[in-house]
Image (cartoon, rainbow, N blue to C red; front, side, top):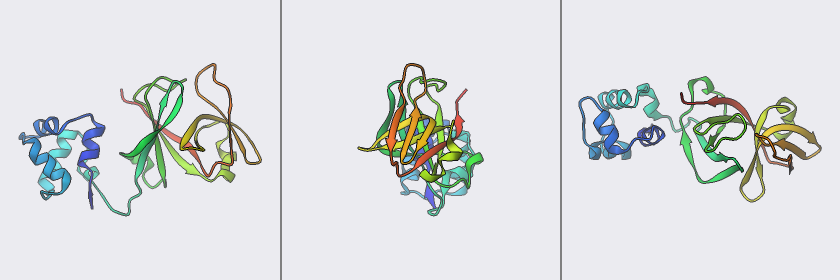
Amino acid sequence: MINRIRDLRKSKGMTLADLAAACDPPTTAQTIGRLETGMRSLSTRWMERIARALEIDPELLVRSDQTPRANVVASLHASGPEALASPREAILPNDLAGAGAMSVLAVEESAGEYRPGDLVWLRQIAPDATAQAINRDVLVPRPGGRFCFGRLIDRQGTLVGVLPPGSGHKQQVVDNPPWIALAEMLVRKL
């Protein structure tokens, strides 16, 4: 089993000290750090305390080695998506459990209907399955580790046409992408 305390803590914007203070009874940042790194054993009692502090189910604190990881692979800005230097793990919503390989696009700046803080969950599909993705939002890899994000509007042979969100953007065409990720869910914090 893999301990996910660090990923969950960071996704909530908490420091080690914040999480330690939120525990009931409070503990030290050093103890939380040791639990995160595995230097201290994560017992059921610790799982319950930390889960309450993070306001999540205790079962989310650990995952099996065989469980596929969902990663935030890019961030969306007004100018378009940018690949992250190193993908970071995302917490898979229960609605998407068992949905296969998932990727996440983190919205950093408003773009069309997307707002800062939104997470767009995407499921990879084969390029030959694009018929199911026409008129839906997709993330498409481009050469050089870049991405294209927007509404899939056309597929002709190996060419894929994507219209970025927002007004004033021109259609982008990607030739022979290895995969296309279809938007499955939008997670927006209230």
